[in-house]
Length: 186
Image (cartoon, rainbow, N blue to C red; front, side, top):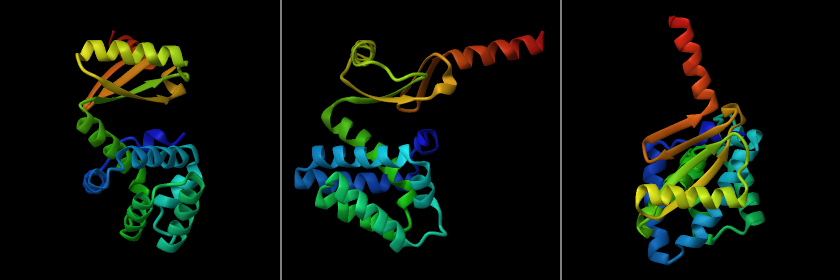
């Protein structure tokens, strides 16, 4: 899964996301564009080859645009989002699309008065577990949250929560690493 390599967003991704947010807000298309971008980002994350093609300078802008146009048709991306992705691709930033989606979703969450939280677990959470996690985090933070779930089997067990720039790491992998380091120092 390519999620970890695309999880963070660059300054450029932030700027593009903010520009799209302003356009989507004005066009009253926040929900449809957010859903479309999330679907596109998932497709990119789930396909390492696609992720590499979009980020590689050896593939032409026209090749990247053709691939993204095909995906946009397949997922029925709103016209504003299609044009935006065309500009992003033309400007050589197709590799930043996942980061742009994340930054856009964060901006939408702020607009709605919610906080975006990324929860990474070793296995896919059930719907009941995801609901309980959302409720618990919302109560702990004292505000509405939007939880994005990711899976990283390397964690072995437990959970990592990212709220803004803060990381709360209760994963088994981190605990084992800490124990290993403590034993080396003894």
